[in-house]
Image 1 (tube, rainbow, N blue to C red):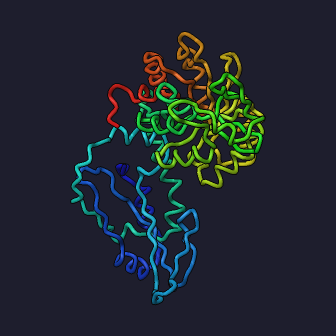
Image 2: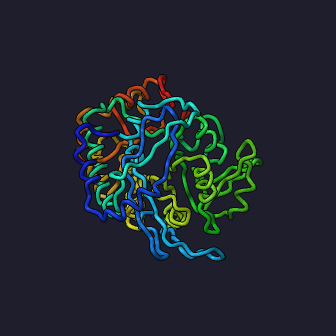
Length: 386
């Protein structure tokens, strides 16, 4: 989305740099092909020229650029290009904007894009510029997009509880097929220290016996059929399915003993930035936030009479999550005054699980950031183009 009279972009293109380096980067700049109907094209690329083997400055995981690959002739130099598209900003306002621009791909990749030399800048210049650009785009969209038009997060409650056994891998896959962005799952810990995805503190075996989660091993629990051949998954297994299905996770903490395992799994599987952790327990939420400050968190509460903003601020939460599904018309509790105060505190709003179309429509009008549902397809909206 190129902003008219784009002084911010012009400032990047005019960044001081070495003319010979830019000429070299322009000589080898990639040529890209886009769908003929694609409206968004790159605006710039930050380049790094390697004369010796070194670590990529722009790739988050620290990729090594090898100029002397094993068994191959050495290279004189290598050039890495970090390409900038505005639409790659991971924010709900941008998601909303892109939803409004959705198109049916033609399959015709005849739109050829070549970088003009002025679009190539040293990587440090692009890196310093990006926060300024992102904030400018978000400020613009906040002015132009009304809350009722927000593309909120569609969260499948316990997977897709209306269509599959709760908290199962099958439920997660069905949620993805029904248009969910994330799946809500509950975590507890077994007797042998495994973090598992399950809501209740026990499973009921076919013969009616109760198998407590905390006093049972993973093998004992996974022997229980949850329906449709599904068995209790570990958090690690759930994350792998979410990766495969391009889903985020909304992890509700049901057992304080599971917190270290949750932190470990998110770091080990590199899924922190695709996760929101939520809990009714402020102390548990503060523990995970302290261990993992970059993790988005959500404070759950049931009473409409408490001060949601102060509660969230006390644990540095990212979102407030009122759990008001028991009320006949819970959306009416999200008054303009209540919402304004939450927004002034720079907090997001994720709502209870909701299956009533009229309530979902009302929440859409309020402009919340996320809604949970046992039936994720209800969250797509009647006019959805996605």
